[in-house]
Image (cartoon, rainbow, N blue to C red; front, side, top):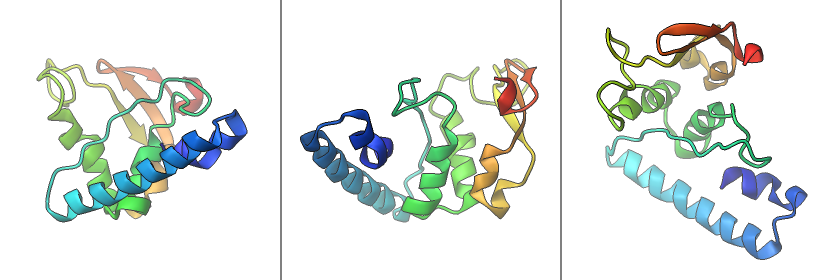
Length: 138
């Protein structure tokens, strides 16, 4: 929704779609804020498919929005994308342990010092094997 709200007009989204997206975004932010304040675990996920408004590889935006719009701390946003998100998928996916699938990234900077560090990827691992030396290799 965020990208549609921010960039939809430039991509031909009609006014009624922009209006509906703005309303949905405001409602989503408010309900997520209330859930977080009530102690409900927040997990990240993705529907970034590669289309112009949802480009592949922009998952960091979700963490940034959790901090900037919802009010999570950078550490809480990292936990939403790691441990909490891992609890939403099958047992062999999402954990860093022997026998688990182990897709993960290594960062150049500590995101607890600023969530924008999630964009500074040093290495990418898939199934526990290094597949890229940073986001530019993908």
